[in-house]
Length: 269
Image (cartoon, rainbow, N blue to C red; front, side, top):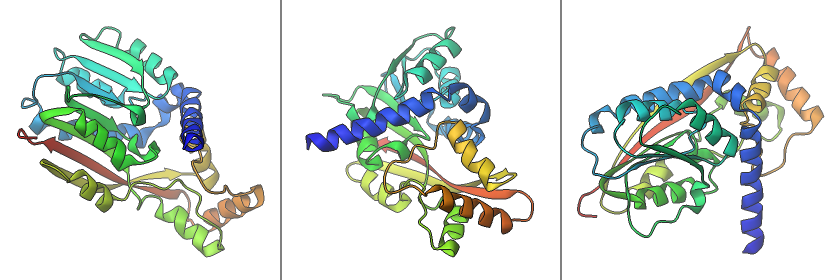
């Protein structure tokens, strides 16, 4: 058991370090993440004024794409903004230094412990895919949310990157992207207990001049951490890039299967 914990912490440290080294590039180039954040905040509008008392907890704040909306919508409510990466937290702290009723600190959401529900809302924007067990960790966030409160999350689902997967299948090489949350499994697991679960799925597509530009983009924004399984060797990667480029007319397309999840905790829970 201790070995498993050590391994998990090591992976999380690598995730945090990679994002920490990429703060500025992430803020400037993580366009899918920014678009999804804007849509996540827009989905909050119907719930805006019906949250119970209590602070708002955000995990995985990144450079503040979602934080910006929380600050604007809830200037008077206490806000606790966290991320696995110290550098991301520092960036947000500086970016929102004039905001009121707000604190920042580093947090591994997988280690979150609360004796009693204390948050009026918990928010996790485009971060659940990095958890070892996304449903379990989001479940912890739900348990930390007060009755009548809301868990709001977004993440890339398991149907993301079909173009990448197809090129790998054609070459007979493994698809080495990280496993992403399965929507149906997530919804089923989050539906246990007295809660109301709403979700919406969509596809967001990015274009790149070549497959090499796509893989470099992931690395540039800190999102290239390989969590498990084997990575492609240099010859396989070169073959994949050339094959993908050869099967594209002009720019290559990369599709994200984006899931928006809202879980409202029943007042009787």
